[in-house]
Image (cartoon, rainbow, N blue to C red; front, top):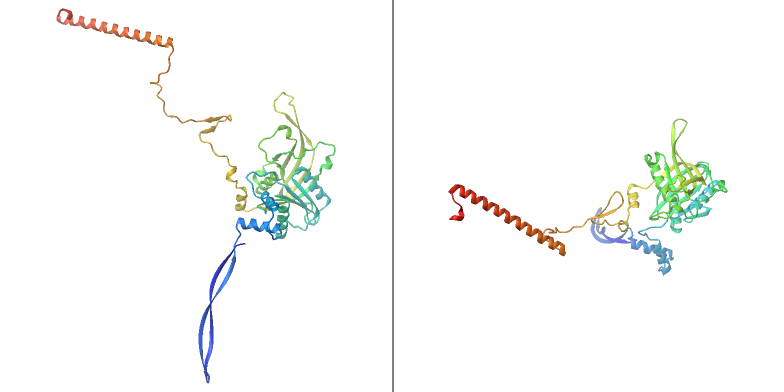
Length: 391
């Protein structure tokens, strides 16, 4: 951390006994000034934080080239790859919740890592969040899930994610019913690394604020590798999340989420259509859960996490537009061309036709002039009694 030194003057007053006569005492009071230096710690710059992190990893020494290369891979990039998930066990974890973590690793594989030992972590405490930040940084994971089981919160699962190596948001859910992958033995399963189709059913996903953030978190958990295009043959499973209102005792109500997973087989349309028809088979895991506690990011932090770098934004092309059919239309700006006075090369037949046309026009003009001359001479003869030719 950088430090700033501030010098502060301090005045000290002292007294000295000069003479004592009876009950009277003469004092001489004088003062002197002393300057003290105070150090104020300031927030480190990004370069200082990077250097301190490198020294910490290297054990207080100058980091080696291998450590510097590793730190370079952990820096933020314009185009990020798939997010990794770290799956942990809490202080106490039942066999059922251990099965949930194993199935989550199977669904998210190869972008998931499961730690088998129990951890003294309480996610909603400050100390627990520091432990989660340390473990996610060490394992290079931006997503995490902590499973636990106790009397107060049975079958508890905390899902969350980090931003800039700090906790961004967390959602604690209570698993009410669960069917693991082993319960669907003998049925086809998804391929390794395949992307799922995610479907969210119910109006609560758009009306409830907590469910909106949970939907965003679930998409981050299961979306896999970011791609620009998909091949239909690569789609092999669908995950459906249905939100419904549950009422307890006729008074209290809470949203209940049903998670269902289906294996999808694309076959030829029997009606002769071009698009294939999907056939769904339940493959698991299936889960019913409710929301217990939430810790979402503040609006400023959420806005910062959602900010997109300028390098990923496509530059707008001038005079390029796209119509409703996806066709690109370009506009060209040219000067006005004088087409009337331009003369191009003409063939022999065109030149002959133009010559004949000019001769016909000349003959027509001469005939009109001759008729006008005859009419004028007749009018002159009627007026004066003789023709103009006899003058």
